[in-house]
Amino acid sequence: MTDRETHIYDDIIHLPHHVSKTRPQMSMHDRAAQFSAFAALVGFDAIIEETKRFTNSKVELSDYETEIINEKLMILSDNLSLHPSVTVRFFLPDERKDGGEYITFRGTVKKIDPIGQVMIFMDGSKIPLENIYSVKSDLFASFSRDD
Image 1: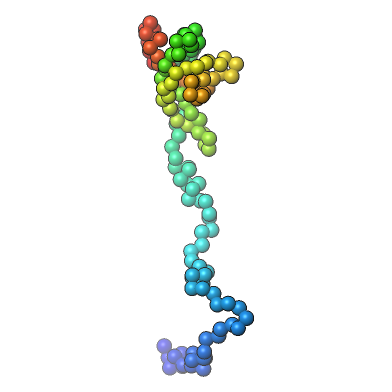
Image 2: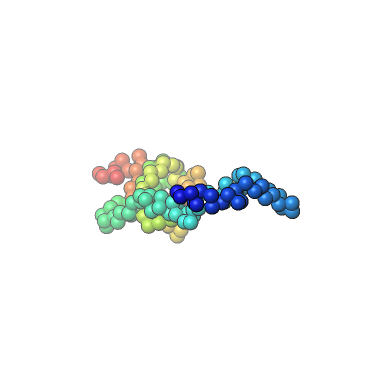
């Protein structure tokens, strides 16, 4: 710095700080907030996290596998009075993006609704028949293959 540059503000540097008589002074917190980081892309991090979240594709069953499940559903329908306990593995579609996940559910079957195409359990849970991947129960002991 030259001598001239060091003395450039000498005429105003020692003047008193102006304080308004009509407006309240801003708090240090509010003043600091003016200079805080600005998030121009609000929600962008959430979108990135959602994109990274993994989902599975629904497996398409063969005709043979579909036939076995249908036979098991018929056995369950015929034996609802026994309150059959089952373990069902089914595909649960994701609500926000393509794909979903496979869930295993255990419960007592109350009804198999052929019109609504759902399996209804005693606790009120419902599983769409089209999403069932496998069904296991003691009722199927006579089956040669128990998925």
